Image 1 (cartoon, one colour):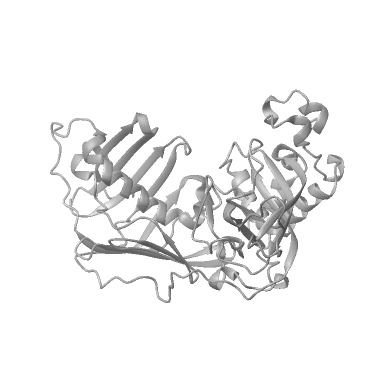
Image 2 (spheres, helix red, strand yellow):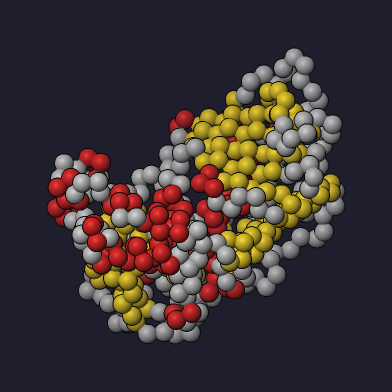
Length: 433
C-alpha cells in the first residue's frame, strides 16, 4: 500500500486547510508577488471573518474525492472551523468531519476519530499580500477578480502559488481558492476549494462549533486477539522495502487503492508491489495514517486495521475477518511496535508485529502487462474489486506472464537497483513486461 498517496482520500480536506495554515505563518515574511498596486486593480477583497457554506467542493491532484458536497463552518471570533462531508466512494459511504480550535485538529471518519497537530488559523492568511492578476470565471456566468500570491522558500525546498477568486459584483463573496505547492517530498500537488455562486453562503452566520460528536481522543483497541501470521501487500518504490511506519493491505484492500493510483499515475516512483508474511498481535488498534515515514492517529504500538478507506462505522476496525471481503483490509505498522532482534510477537516483550518473510516482489509494469488495469475497469473501480483482486492474486501465485503470473523481482540479485536502470530487466521479466 502506498502510504504517501493512499491517505490523500482520507486527508484531502485536512491537507487543504493545513496548507493554508503553513502559508499563513510564512506569507507575511516570505511572499513574493507581482505589484500589489497594478493599474486598474479593483478594490481589495473584504472576506467575512465568519461564514457558513453549504455545498463547497474540493478537488485534489490524482482525482480523489472530486466534487464533495459539504458544509464548511468558519469563525475567527471563536477561533474554530469545521468541515463535514458525506461522500459516496466506490459504492460505499464516507461521513467525515475535520475540526480545528485554538490548539488541536480532530478528524473523524465514519465515527473513528484521530488527533493531529495543527490549530485554527485565518483562512485568508496571505490574501492581504496577494496581487490582482486579472479576471476569471471559475463557474460560467459568474465573472470574478483573481488575486495571486507566490511563496518561495529555497532553503526549505518549498514553492507555492495561491490564487483567490472573488465575485466582481461582490468582493466579500469568495468563489474559489487554488493552491499548487511543491516540497522536496511532494511535487506539484494541487488543491482547489470551490464555493460555487449557486451554493448557500451565509456570512456572519456560524453556530457554536464543537468537536465531532462522540469523538474520544483516547485510542481505541479491539478485544484481545491471538498471534497470527497475516499476508500483507505493499505498493512502493523499489528503493525502499521496509514496512515499519507504513500502510499495507490484503489483496482486495490494496487492489482498491492501486487501481486508482496506477491508473492515474499518481505515484510514478512506486514501481513494485511486494507481498510479506507478517506475524501480528490481532488486538487491533486504530489504523494510523502513515506518510513519508511517520504515522498519525493510530493506537500506539498496536497494529492498526480498518476496511479500505474506512468506509463503514468506526472504520470496521474490529469487524470479523469473514465480513471484510467486500472492502478488503488496510493495516498500519509502526516502528515502535516492531519486534527487535531475538524477540517474537507474544513473548512478553510487548512488540506487536514481526516481518517473517518477504514472499515476492512484482514489477508494476508486469501487473499492467498481465491485465491488472483492465480488471480494474471491469470492476468499474468499485468495491469489491473482485476482478482486480483476482488479477493481483494470480500475479503473486504464478510466475509465468502468459498465465497471468508476475515474475519475482529478486531484490538480492538486483541489489536495490530501480527497474529503469537495471540491465538484467529484460532477461528477468520477458518481452513486454
